[in-house]
Image (cartoon, rainbow, N blue to C red; front, side, top):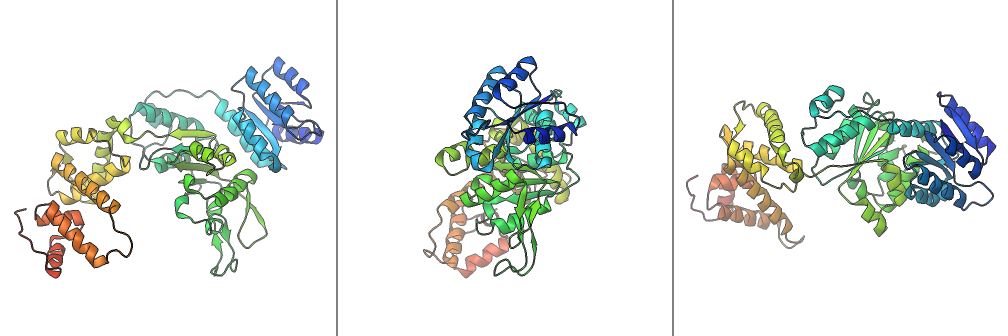
Length: 458
C-alpha cells in the first residue's frame, strides 16, 4: 500500500491514478492526523508526503510528520513533494530521513521511476555468499576480486543494478571506479543502450553546457555545426559522471536542474528536451567535507547518492594482488606475443607487500613496464623493484620541475640525461629505459650535448 499525504485534492487524485495504473494500491490523507491514523493501522510500503498542509508555506507540518514517521519506522521510504523554491526545505527533509524529493509540477515518468526504484530497493534480496554464485547471476567478468569487502560491493551492485537508483562511487584514484560504473550498467535493464563516460574534471565551466547538453549551429562564435550533448548521447542508457567533485559551482547548478526536472535545453535553442538516463557518479574527494566548506551543493549531493559505494584501496585488499597480476599477465602475454611469461613466487610475494598508492592502475602499469623492459620469461623481484624505483624517480622529478621560463626544453633534456646516467652508474640500457628511449637514441643525445660518459657493462 502507498500512502499519499497532501491537502490538495487534485494532487491526491492525480498521483493516485498514476500509481494505481501500475497496479499499486493507494490510500490518501489530507492532514497529519488522518495520515497518522492510516500509518497506525498499517505501515505503508512507501509514503508520498507534501511539506505544506495549509496556507503556511514554512513546511513545519510536513517536517513534523516526517519526524513522527521516522520514530515509528526508520526504513519505510518517504518521498517529499515540494516546489523548486523550497529545495532547501527538501534538503532538511533528507537530513531527517526522507529518501527522495520531487518538484511541483512533476513529471509522471519521473515520479513512477522514483517510486518503483525505492520499492525495489526495499525488497529483500538474496545473499549470494561467494564469487562463484555471484558470477552465475551477474556479469562481473571485468571485476577481478575475491576480497570480502569487494564481494559485498558486488552484491550491492547486483541488488541495485536493476533499478534506476542514482549511485555515487567513492574511492582513491586507480581503485576501479569506472569498472564498477560499467558493471552497474551491464547488469541493468539499460545494458543494451549507451554507456556514456564524462570526465567532469576536464570540462571548463564555459564549455559545460555545450558539452553536456549540446548546441545548435550559430549558438556562439565558434559553433559552426550542431553538436549532440552527452545527456542526449546517453538517452535511455547510463551516464557516468567521473570526478564530479571537480565540478565548478555554476556547473553544479546546471547539472542539478537537469537531475531535478529531467529536462534541458540545447544551447542556442528554446526547445526543452526530456532526458531519461541512469546517473552514476564517482569522485576521489570527500563530498561531505566539500559541502561543509561550501564548495559542493548539498542538494546536488542528496540527488546523486541514493546508493553510495566505497571502493577500498589496494593496500586494504592485498590478497587480490596475485589475482590482478595473473589477469594483467594473461592479457599482456597475448598483446606482446610472449606466451611463456610468468612471475616468480618470490616476486608475487614481494608485490603483495607493497602499498601501491596509485592502486590498481599503478599495479597494472608496473607489470606492463616490467614486461617491456625485461627480456626474461620469468619476472623476478628485481624487475618490479627497478620499475617501481623508476616511477618514484619520475614522480620526484615531476614534483621538482622548475617554473615556466626558468629553463629551456633543451636544458631540461640535458639535465634529465645527466641524472639518469648518474642514477644508473653509467649503464646505458637502464638509463635509456628510465628515460623511455632506445640505447641508440640515448647515445645520440650524449654525443649531441657532449656529455662525458664511461659506459659500464650492462
